[in-house]
Image (cartoon, rainbow, N blue to C red; front, side, top):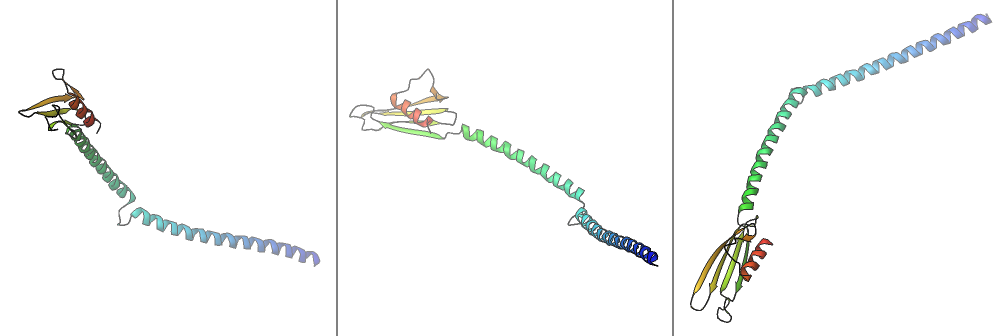
Length: 166
């Protein structure tokens, strides 16, 4: 009986271990099934979107919105470029110089004004004041230089360089 009892105990232990492993595996399968069910529920909720639309529809909508934003950006960039061109061509730099055209007789009433755009194009206005008369002159400036038809006075040169430096 001793041999039967040992065999019975060994067979019983093996059977018990096999049943324990089967129950453990069955518990793991139930746990995995539960987690899979939760993941499926979350996936369906995510794919349906907040308002019932699918992710694909949401991506299509967002892609459309991004394309519209890019087109609007391009339009705004063109407008900015146009405004930049306008600002570059507008008269923006001014310099005024007062001086005595005639020693001790002009009372510092003579003046010249350089008015330039950002490309150094513009004009220089000059007024030479004496006791009896006043003369006014306008000289065109292109790219920071006066035409060869005209000669700038020292004061006009000074006004031009000051305006170009702003």
